[in-house]
Length: 124
Picture: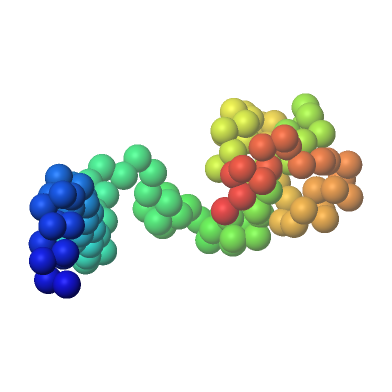
């Protein structure tokens, strides 16, 4: 029985070596990936140059404006029938004098406005 096993190993040495090599490479790759992933999870995210600091802007506003920011969640234009999330690129293009704010979707819809085409994409 042992001699049969030795002959089988001698005949298939190349195949056995290939299989063992593939298994070792897979295990080493998995181990390296696991180590890298564990290091990434422990790192903090640091923003060096924020382009928008809402806290400092809100601190500089009068109390009435701060309260309005908390209540008004959707923006529309007097020149269109669409309402947007404030972060929507289309909303950012509405000039200040043409802006109309709504505190709810229902309020916007009651005023005759409909969702913009990118509404779901920019939902918070």
